[in-house]
Image (tube, rainbow over all chains, first blue to last red; front, side):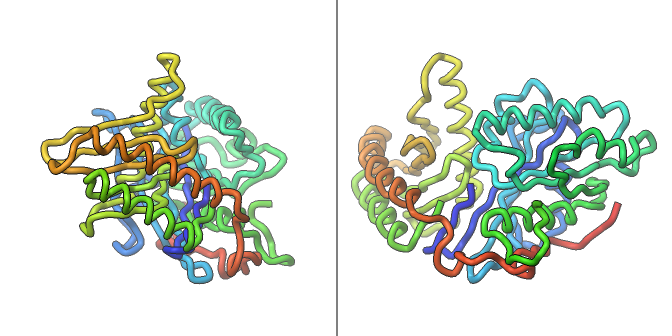
Length: 205
Length: 157
């Protein structure tokens, strides 16, 4: 839920990186944290288990733009991808303004991607959020690996709703596609909240 | 939701009274999604953004624990440290109140006055939520340039 604070001249948004386990959600945030200059980022917090898998969430606040005198801040979260962490995954979605679905492009992970996407739809429904109205993008990660499915096939599996959303190929560990993903979802969140002037293309459409 | 200057002033007044009565050092009003709505207290460098995200996470996970026991939620969460402690309590279904306090007061005092403060703040938040969201300079749609963000460099996969 966007929070517009007129006293502080700040608008806060929450963006959640969702997807199956080990798809690269945390790697996205780590690259963003490593790359952004200090004034544009806060501390990154990772609530991870001993094996580096996310236990509850990762959190990174970033800001990059001013809208009519208001600083737009985006609080980036990841969810734990493992199937059995659904309760905590659902908690992180509370108040979400925009989503990045991080898919693992490897052939043998396709089923997990589809299951995670369905799980996202179910969890959103429990908050009465509707994915058809939610700004989101899809990131096909790990495109550098040898055993990846063709992009068209990934699209067929994951981007087949009535509204097709922007997608990005990525190698999150090296940063490829990470900022294209973030810039697009943050723009969609801003347009979703405040609208965009008529006659211009709406990327959420 | 929108917090206008008038709402912020009223919330700060309630939180300042709460600090005076309870002896707590800082009071943070936090949206349950993890975002800081207002803060009053000692002027020291706390990472309030991270505190808000973590406190909301902790509070929501204890809420889930409560539901496993058949409770609606646990309305208070208390973390005791050596010198400083933290008390988190329900304001309404969308916000929580976090108080940080040291050795000059007790959890009982904080709990007592947090309840009063939560009721007062809850009323202000309810009014704020009822107001239109995009007003004033934000009432008209953004231009393409205004909705453009420029995080980092672009690298193609």
